[in-house]
Image (cartoon, rainbow, N blue to C red; front, side, top):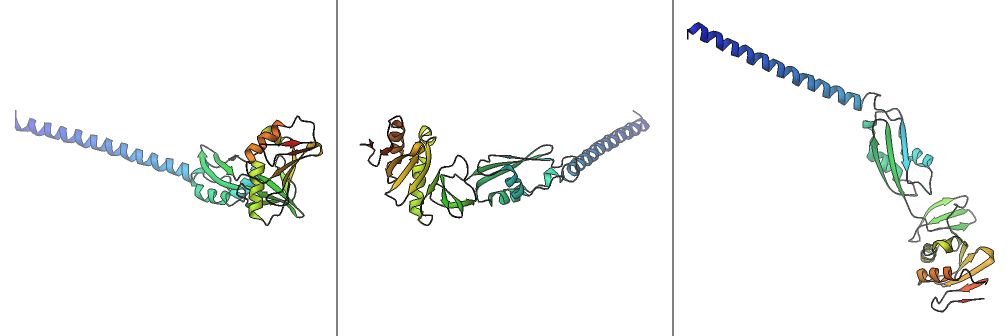
Amino acid sequence: MPVSDINVAIELRRRRRRRRNQIIAGIVAAVVVLILVAIWVVRSSSVFSVDTVEVHGTHLGTVSQVEQAAKVQKGQPLARVNTDEVVARVTSMDIVHQAEVYRKWPHTLVIDVTELKVSYQVKTPGGYLWIDPTGAIFNRTAKPTPKVVWATTSSGNRALLRDVATVADSFPVELRRQVDHVEAKSRDAIVVVLSGKRTVVWGSADQSELKGKVTAAMLNVKATRFDVSSPEHPTSR
Protein backbone atom coordinates (compact mmCIF):
# COMPACT_ATOMS: atom_id res chain seq x y z
CA MET A 1 0.00 0.00 0.00
CA PRO A 2 1.42 3.39 -0.95
CA VAL A 3 2.59 5.59 1.90
CA SER A 4 0.06 8.26 0.92
CA ASP A 5 -2.80 5.81 1.34
CA ILE A 6 -1.52 4.79 4.77
CA ASN A 7 -1.36 8.43 5.84
CA VAL A 8 -4.91 9.01 4.62
CA ALA A 9 -6.17 6.01 6.57
CA ILE A 10 -4.42 7.18 9.73
CA GLU A 11 -5.89 10.66 9.35
CA LEU A 12 -9.38 9.23 8.88
CA ARG A 13 -9.02 7.19 12.06
CA ARG A 14 -7.84 10.29 13.91
CA ARG A 15 -10.82 12.27 12.69
CA ARG A 16 -13.22 9.52 13.68
CA ARG A 17 -11.62 9.29 17.13
CA ARG A 18 -11.74 13.07 17.52
CA ARG A 19 -15.38 13.17 16.45
CA ARG A 20 -16.25 10.32 18.85
CA ASN A 21 -14.47 12.09 21.70
CA GLN A 22 -16.30 15.31 20.87
CA ILE A 23 -19.64 13.49 20.88
CA ILE A 24 -18.84 11.83 24.21
CA ALA A 25 -17.73 15.15 25.68
CA GLY A 26 -20.93 16.76 24.43
CA ILE A 27 -23.07 14.04 25.96
CA VAL A 28 -21.24 14.30 29.30
CA ALA A 29 -21.62 18.08 29.27
CA ALA A 30 -25.33 17.78 28.49
CA VAL A 31 -25.82 15.26 31.31
CA VAL A 32 -23.98 17.52 33.76
CA VAL A 33 -26.13 20.48 32.71
CA LEU A 34 -29.30 18.41 33.13
CA ILE A 35 -28.20 17.27 36.59
CA LEU A 36 -27.41 20.85 37.63
CA VAL A 37 -30.75 22.05 36.29
CA ALA A 38 -32.55 19.22 38.11
CA ILE A 39 -30.77 20.08 41.37
CA TRP A 40 -31.69 23.73 40.95
CA VAL A 41 -35.31 22.88 40.17
CA VAL A 42 -35.59 20.61 43.22
CA ARG A 43 -33.68 22.75 45.72
CA SER A 44 -34.27 26.33 44.65
CA SER A 45 -37.24 26.75 42.34
CA SER A 46 -40.94 26.80 43.23
CA VAL A 47 -41.68 23.80 41.01
CA PHE A 48 -41.40 21.47 44.04
CA SER A 49 -42.43 23.86 46.80
CA VAL A 50 -44.31 23.05 50.00
CA ASP A 51 -48.03 23.46 49.37
CA THR A 52 -49.41 21.08 52.00
CA VAL A 53 -48.45 19.90 55.48
CA GLU A 54 -50.12 16.62 56.46
CA VAL A 55 -50.32 15.71 60.15
CA HIS A 56 -51.19 12.20 61.31
CA GLY A 57 -51.55 10.61 64.75
CA THR A 58 -53.15 13.41 66.76
CA HIS A 59 -55.71 12.42 69.39
CA LEU A 60 -55.00 14.61 72.40
CA GLY A 61 -53.74 17.57 70.42
CA THR A 62 -55.00 19.03 67.15
CA VAL A 63 -53.58 19.23 63.65
CA SER A 64 -53.47 23.00 63.98
CA GLN A 65 -51.38 22.80 67.17
CA VAL A 66 -48.84 20.53 65.48
CA GLU A 67 -48.66 22.77 62.41
CA GLN A 68 -48.04 25.81 64.59
CA ALA A 69 -45.27 24.01 66.47
CA ALA A 70 -43.68 22.71 63.24
CA LYS A 71 -43.38 26.23 61.76
CA VAL A 72 -43.08 24.96 58.18
CA GLN A 73 -43.05 27.85 55.73
CA LYS A 74 -45.26 27.08 52.77
CA GLY A 75 -43.86 28.01 49.38
CA GLN A 76 -40.28 27.10 50.22
CA PRO A 77 -38.58 24.33 48.20
CA LEU A 78 -39.59 20.98 49.65
CA ALA A 79 -36.02 19.66 49.41
CA ARG A 80 -34.71 22.50 51.57
CA VAL A 81 -36.97 21.81 54.54
CA ASN A 82 -34.78 20.73 57.45
CA THR A 83 -36.75 17.73 58.68
CA ASP A 84 -34.57 17.30 61.79
CA GLU A 85 -35.43 20.81 62.92
CA VAL A 86 -39.13 20.18 62.30
CA VAL A 87 -38.93 16.98 64.39
CA ALA A 88 -37.23 18.90 67.20
CA ARG A 89 -39.92 21.58 67.22
CA VAL A 90 -42.80 19.10 67.15
CA THR A 91 -41.35 16.87 69.89
CA SER A 92 -40.95 19.93 72.12
CA MET A 93 -44.75 19.83 72.53
CA ASP A 94 -45.76 18.52 75.95
CA ILE A 95 -48.10 15.90 74.50
CA VAL A 96 -45.74 14.51 71.85
CA HIS A 97 -43.58 11.47 72.54
CA GLN A 98 -41.92 11.27 69.13
CA ALA A 99 -42.40 12.45 65.55
CA GLU A 100 -41.33 11.42 62.07
CA VAL A 101 -41.14 13.95 59.23
CA TYR A 102 -40.72 13.07 55.57
CA ARG A 103 -41.35 14.48 52.10
CA LYS A 104 -44.12 13.31 49.80
CA TRP A 105 -43.29 14.66 46.38
CA PRO A 106 -44.01 16.94 44.74
CA HIS A 107 -45.58 19.35 47.23
CA THR A 108 -46.30 17.72 50.61
CA LEU A 109 -44.48 17.47 53.94
CA VAL A 110 -45.82 14.71 56.20
CA ILE A 111 -45.60 14.78 60.00
CA ASP A 112 -46.40 11.51 61.81
CA VAL A 113 -46.92 12.11 65.53
CA THR A 114 -46.87 9.65 68.41
CA GLU A 115 -48.44 11.28 71.44
CA LEU A 116 -47.76 10.54 75.06
CA LYS A 117 -50.35 8.26 76.61
CA VAL A 118 -52.74 10.00 78.96
CA SER A 119 -54.09 7.52 81.50
CA TYR A 120 -56.48 9.99 83.12
CA GLN A 121 -56.86 13.64 84.08
CA VAL A 122 -56.87 15.10 87.59
CA LYS A 123 -59.50 17.71 88.32
CA THR A 124 -58.06 20.72 90.17
CA PRO A 125 -59.38 24.23 90.95
CA GLY A 126 -57.17 25.55 88.15
CA GLY A 127 -58.10 23.05 85.48
CA TYR A 128 -57.23 19.49 84.53
CA LEU A 129 -53.82 17.81 84.71
CA TRP A 130 -52.94 15.02 82.30
CA ILE A 131 -51.24 12.03 83.91
CA ASP A 132 -49.20 9.39 82.08
CA PRO A 133 -48.86 5.72 83.17
CA THR A 134 -45.87 6.56 85.39
CA GLY A 135 -47.82 9.17 87.34
CA ALA A 136 -46.07 12.10 85.66
CA ILE A 137 -47.98 15.30 84.90
CA PHE A 138 -47.33 16.35 81.30
CA ASN A 139 -50.07 18.78 80.33
CA ARG A 140 -52.72 21.10 81.72
CA THR A 141 -56.06 22.10 80.19
CA ALA A 142 -58.77 24.50 81.29
CA LYS A 143 -61.56 22.09 80.39
CA PRO A 144 -61.85 18.29 80.68
CA THR A 145 -60.76 16.27 77.67
CA PRO A 146 -63.60 14.12 76.30
CA LYS A 147 -63.30 10.33 76.58
CA VAL A 148 -60.50 10.59 79.16
CA VAL A 149 -61.27 9.42 82.71
CA TRP A 150 -60.98 12.16 85.31
CA ALA A 151 -60.13 11.78 88.98
CA THR A 152 -60.00 13.69 92.24
CA THR A 153 -56.77 13.06 94.13
CA SER A 154 -53.62 14.74 95.38
CA SER A 155 -51.58 16.03 92.44
CA GLY A 156 -48.50 16.21 94.65
CA ASN A 157 -48.29 12.49 95.45
CA ARG A 158 -46.48 10.81 92.53
CA ALA A 159 -46.98 7.29 93.90
CA LEU A 160 -50.72 7.87 94.29
CA LEU A 161 -50.93 9.38 90.80
CA ARG A 162 -49.20 6.29 89.43
CA ASP A 163 -51.59 3.97 91.27
CA VAL A 164 -54.62 5.77 89.88
CA ALA A 165 -53.09 5.46 86.40
CA THR A 166 -52.76 1.71 86.95
CA VAL A 167 -56.42 1.55 87.92
CA ALA A 168 -57.64 3.70 85.03
CA ASP A 169 -55.61 1.72 82.49
CA SER A 170 -57.07 -1.56 83.74
CA PHE A 171 -60.70 -0.80 82.87
CA PRO A 172 -62.14 -3.18 80.26
CA VAL A 173 -64.07 -1.44 77.49
CA GLU A 174 -67.48 -2.39 78.89
CA LEU A 175 -66.52 -0.98 82.29
CA ARG A 176 -64.87 2.17 80.95
CA ARG A 177 -68.11 3.13 79.21
CA GLN A 178 -69.83 3.34 82.61
CA VAL A 179 -67.07 5.04 84.60
CA ASP A 180 -67.93 8.58 85.66
CA HIS A 181 -64.75 9.35 87.60
CA VAL A 182 -62.26 8.04 90.16
CA GLU A 183 -61.77 9.22 93.74
CA ALA A 184 -58.47 8.47 95.46
CA LYS A 185 -57.94 9.74 99.00
CA SER A 186 -54.94 7.46 99.54
CA ARG A 187 -53.15 4.55 97.86
CA ASP A 188 -55.38 2.06 99.68
CA ALA A 189 -58.63 3.99 99.33
CA ILE A 190 -59.38 4.21 95.62
CA VAL A 191 -63.04 4.35 94.63
CA VAL A 192 -64.43 4.17 91.10
CA VAL A 193 -67.69 6.06 90.62
CA LEU A 194 -69.98 4.68 87.90
CA SER A 195 -72.99 6.17 86.18
CA GLY A 196 -76.27 5.84 88.06
CA LYS A 197 -74.67 6.79 91.39
CA ARG A 198 -73.00 3.40 91.72
CA THR A 199 -69.61 3.03 93.37
CA VAL A 200 -66.86 0.43 93.24
CA VAL A 201 -64.59 0.10 96.26
CA TRP A 202 -61.31 -0.69 94.52
CA GLY A 203 -58.94 -0.48 97.44
CA SER A 204 -55.33 -0.38 96.27
CA ALA A 205 -54.00 -0.64 92.72
CA ASP A 206 -52.88 -4.23 93.35
CA GLN A 207 -54.51 -6.81 91.04
CA SER A 208 -56.19 -4.01 89.08
CA GLU A 209 -56.51 -6.07 85.93
CA LEU A 210 -58.39 -8.78 87.81
CA LYS A 211 -60.48 -6.19 89.65
CA GLY A 212 -61.46 -4.66 86.32
CA LYS A 213 -62.61 -7.99 84.93
CA VAL A 214 -64.54 -8.83 88.10
CA THR A 215 -66.26 -5.44 88.13
CA ALA A 216 -67.20 -5.75 84.45
CA ALA A 217 -68.74 -9.15 85.15
CA MET A 218 -70.85 -7.67 87.98
CA LEU A 219 -72.27 -4.73 86.04
CA ASN A 220 -75.59 -6.48 85.45
CA VAL A 221 -76.09 -7.05 89.16
CA LYS A 222 -78.69 -4.70 90.62
CA ALA A 223 -76.63 -2.93 93.24
CA THR A 224 -75.32 0.53 94.06
CA ARG A 225 -72.11 -0.52 95.78
CA PHE A 226 -69.57 -3.06 94.62
CA ASP A 227 -66.48 -4.06 96.56
CA VAL A 228 -63.63 -5.64 94.62
CA SER A 229 -60.85 -4.71 97.03
CA SER A 230 -60.48 -8.47 97.45
CA PRO A 231 -61.22 -9.57 93.86
CA GLU A 232 -61.36 -13.26 94.73
CA HIS A 233 -64.28 -12.48 97.08
CA PRO A 234 -66.23 -9.55 95.58
CA THR A 235 -69.41 -8.28 97.18
CA SER A 236 -72.31 -6.06 96.16
CA ARG A 237 -75.31 -4.52 97.84
